Picture 1 (cartoon, one colour):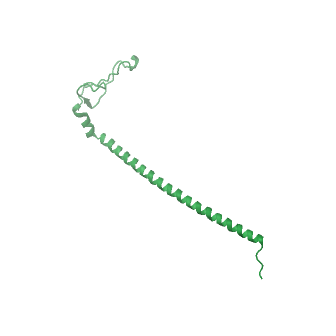
Picture 2: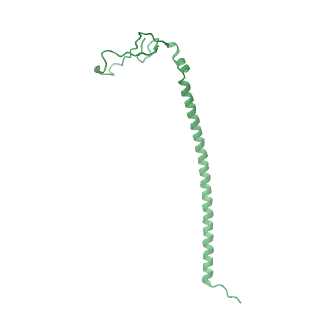
Length: 130
């Protein structure tokens, strides 16, 4: 008859089996958790990508609106018929609002500006006159 393994050898084998079983269970749970994190990260990435695309679209629309507003034809249409060629001896005076500048800051002789466009019509409220 054969002798059965000794008690310490059985305990060592049982402990080794339990350690392997616990390690496998822990590794399996870790894989499940990592899979969930990857899925969550992928969903967040899709959400942020769509937000970025929407922001890019709005930025392009804003740039297009700005470019359209700064086109010479658009600016001319907004001003209307108030632009005429400047006459050779025409001077445009800009008067500061009262009390905005100290008396010593106002030069004795006002500066002249040689603009190539003159504004016609009534004063536009910015101090420009004919």
